[in-house]
Image (cartoon, rainbow, N blue to C red; front, side, top):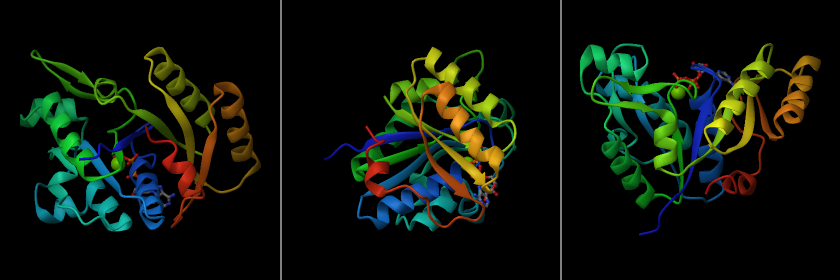
Length: 228
Ligand SMILES: Nc1ncnc2c1ncn2[C@@H]1O[C@H](COP(=O)(O)OP(=O)(O)OP(=O)(O)O)[C@@H](O)[C@H]1O
Ligand SMILES: [Mg+2]
């Protein structure tokens, strides 16, 4: 069976638009004929019901990108408390096990050619932190040998947030292939943010995603080339 090429989507923080942008990426690839899929290791703040799952990141991407997939294959750990997975697991049990995440990713990788994995929160989000294990997102990224794209807000404060994240990821030897700026309105400041991010990090800003965008302004072939 073919092994998918993978890409990890992280962000400068939680709620910045990883799911929104990922859905547009997977949709674009699929519309261009690429066999593209989605996977997320851990979701928090969710009722463990069918409706809860449908309203989740996985449910959103499935619907927008038109994935014909059982939601249980798209996400492995679900926590009810709306906190980081490490804390949710301390409260609810069922802490993240790396082999389970690897197995679920491998199952998806066997089915798709281009697999996008969404992170939880920003890059420094602890997935598990207890007396038995400490697992961070970067452990998953390294274990699965993934390159990343970084989603950030287009507006005020983003130069600082992007540069700090990129420098940390460099320090940890994680490849950042590009930045995607979300909630882009077209202001002078936002255009300067794009320029400054590229100058200060040397990493290209791949796309500017507007409010309620239904398409990502990045050619499918260029998107596909980000996967490795
Ligand atoms: N470009 C956009 N236009 C309109 N709404 C957006 C856009 N980007 C994000 N949103 C909305 O902002 C909220 C947060 O976005 P999203 O869920 O994608 O963030 P996230 O980074 O995936 O968060 P988490 O860390 O919880 O996974 C959602 O309600 C989403 O629909
Ligand atoms: Mg999300």
